[in-house]
Image (cartoon, rainbow, N blue to C red; front, side, top):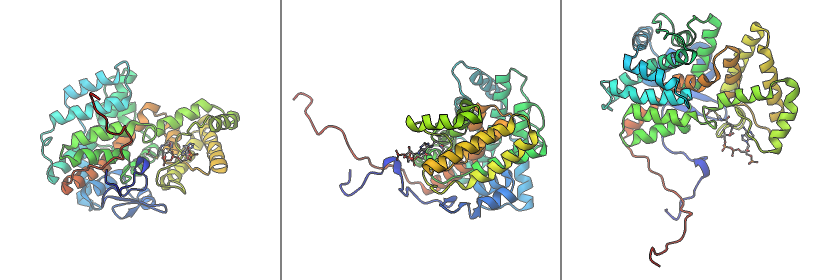
Length: 374
Ligand code: CMC
């Protein structure tokens, strides 16, 4: 290692490259110049997907052509549908593993698979974005033991995703909540999965390979898997009365509270409040047990803030919101993929244009030099 270089644990605070896709700041989250509250309030997921993949806000004509292309690309070859069924019902599978395998398999059916020109990358990005929603829907159908629900090209990306998973069209409010969650999840600078994708793309390997690696990275509970882990933790707490003792026990054993903390945001995640408000309002209307999960979650939040000064990230409200909507917990991170695929593709396109290998150094901590026969 270069004697003057200083190692940073987990690359914290290191600027590892340049990007025009997204800016993650303490006070703001910006996708290609547009602030996240503005996008969550005024854009749809399809518009944000276009913005990320193609670089600018679409005109009305560009948007309608883009939506048509995405809707037409939703169907999958029969071999791929068969593999989804096999993977989703295999004995030790998690939907993220199945999604990773199927995305890798899809490369074999993509005519642009080996072409890393910008034009081919955009075509593949659109196809993969459309196909991932279908994979999630088919996986859930297979897990539930029902017939495969075919995609409905008349529905928006968010509505079609819910429809394929459940076989029933969502309400306008459910569609809106999932649409906003997809906008919030779509892009986040050099996070672990995006960086993984960029490292793969940096070798000039192909887009499907980069996305397969990114999915594997997103699965972990310190990253995208936190939305599932957060909800599993709330289920473990179970009642409002248990929160205090659960938290004290967690602090005493140094157990991490899932859905809290962030490598970059130290004053809170800009996305969390947006989703929390939508999820709580939905839970209040739904009634029954639904509000209980937000009550428990808010008590956890208060204790974390008061005792540790650590705030929730977007995965915390996401867990509660998807749960009260009846979405199966193991599909939360795959739904994250259905959104982040757009940001990942934007980064792969940028990395391929850069044509620079990513190859850092390590600070060696092994034995000093020794002789094999000495
Ligand atoms: N629960 C309890 N303590 C925490 C938490 C938490 N969720 N997050 C941070 N801390 C403590 C940590 O124990 C450490 O304390 P100490 O200095 O006494 O050892 C201190 O805060 C600094 O934490 P860190 O883990 O060194 O910080 P980091 O920047 O390396 O980690 C993180 C960031 C997101 C991995 C971490 O906060 C964490 O593990 N959170 C829980 C998992 C999670 O919610 N991940 C989602 C991340 S954001 C969205 C996404 O990517 O999907």
